Length: 148
Image (cartoon, rainbow, N blue to C red; front, side, top):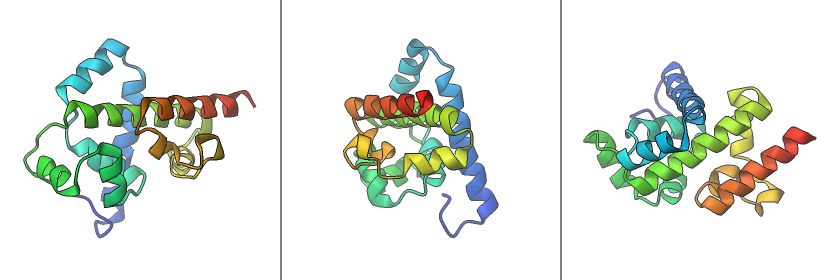
């Protein structure tokens, strides 16, 4: 498990893994994405996302609707995420890939993902990804930035 005590190069590799996943998912058809969600994402993607956005345990619990102990157990036992957690990971990846197109670098896109946004009711785009409606709002906020 990668933590803040983990050497920076390893954390950067895990973070880069998330951005690669986001790019790959953005190129999949909806049918492929649904198949991935139903099969469940590998638990390593949770770690990669946590490192990409420097998320704490409470943020992880809220986003995935799973306790930290359940997330850690799934990682230790290499169990896939359930469909709900996988769908939320897919939502985050899709918004993140859209943000990457708008902001052009993972650092700037990542910063946008974790910054409170008035257009999202004072939530971060990452928090907005907890629901389908919030995810749509995040995409609309990005579309507004694209057209500006």
